Image (cartoon, rainbow, N blue to C red; front, side, top):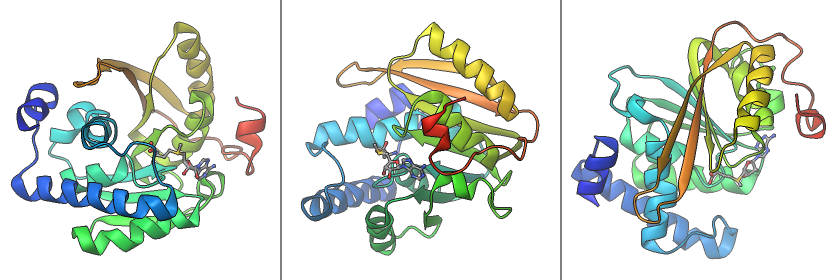
Length: 234
Ligand code: SAM
């Protein structure tokens, strides 16, 4: 896959990173029977939908020289956070999920893969967003396959500092979704700066990564209490 990485992302893993990505695959597949972590188990599909997709989603940030403090919201078995932690050992990655067994899995494999830059955390995002150790603390917030876009924005933007970025990983994307998200992010102190449309290299599936820049502090009202963003999306 080396040339595909290079051709599509202008980045490719070193031998050590390749080995770590392979260990990650083996660890997920091994634990999957017990923990039911993912439907995607075939090697090529795993590579495309979990490894490549995670890294491609951040676009040119993957080769940006700045080290960043990153939060992966609703990380599940560690996507997109774990492939990015492998690709960028200088990024500090906080991986959050409300399901303890998923975070337990990430905790168990971190030393095996040799990842010193990840910080797994069991929490509801609505609670984290109101804690001062996390609120307005991150350069980059990532959300993949967690909820509809406006809900994801309410989860992500309170965690991002002014000048930082949130990236929503989406599949299909419509003009109506853009209009609705634009109104939501304005309430949360952000602006949509880019809609990055691309297709995946093996199955040609459509992806849109929505980049939101944080322009002002989020009002203390957001995020609302646990469950409210889902019940009444902005
Ligand atoms: N991001 C991963 C991926 O793309 O493979 C996992 C996606 S999985 C479909 C959604 C995850 O979000 C679940 O593990 C769920 O526990 C977590 N989640 C949903 N709402 C959450 C919330 N409010 N706070 C924390 N985690 C949440």
